Length: 279
Ligand code: 5GP
Ligand code: MN
Ligand code: MN
Image (cartoon, rainbow, N blue to C red; front, side):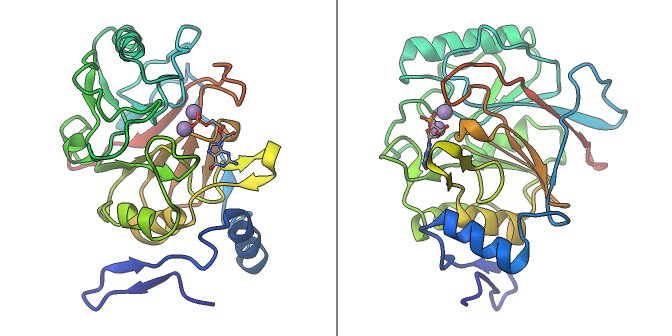
């Protein structure tokens, strides 16, 4: 079959559209049978850090949430250095919901700390539940919705990047699978440490039981595993996939707070990473 990655003559790794791009369930089955790609020892389930565990010296604590859908009241927020929210923070995208979200952010850590929210190019259709037009309304923490300003708020030395999800019924931040999305993933620079996307990569916390489908993005998986190789990849969108996995290079977090029935019962996920020594 066609190689999904090759090296450019100037040695930048080029990710190509996968032959199974349009059918992620089939891609999952194929790569599992032929490569064991989603099984041990290639991947492991990970237990998240308990909220009351002390942070080891020299580490940065990331508190990850996603898909809060305006149901923030019951969420118990542990303290950390950086709060990551991977999208779907409203239900309908109303300004009143953004205001409420901002107030909640402000209460989370009493005005200290940093929050990373997903954004996107301003020409994208406005989502029922994402953050593109909202930075002006969200002011409680140092919030960043633009990938190129992210470096300003993270502890120095962490390099972040953030983006969108495969097309699903024309909702916000959707693009067709294949070339269109790959072109967005190609904007993620090599060497990003903390990657935030709204949706999962193929095979990692992307299973939709009611449809018996894998819905993660194949091009995102190939981009993450073969080219970008971040230390942490945070996403949500598939509420059923809440949890943590790892592949030896990257820790994958589906931080969906809401279940598939929009009950906000999944706790925020704490991840401690060694703070880069050059910070
Ligand atoms: P949301 O509306 O919050 O973006 O998505 C909520 C739910 O819609 C997910 O938990 C999942 O059940 C379903 N969903 C979202 N995207 C997809 C997709 O691409 N394929 C399928 N089959 N279901 C999806
Ligand atoms: Mn959601
Ligand atoms: Mn979503």
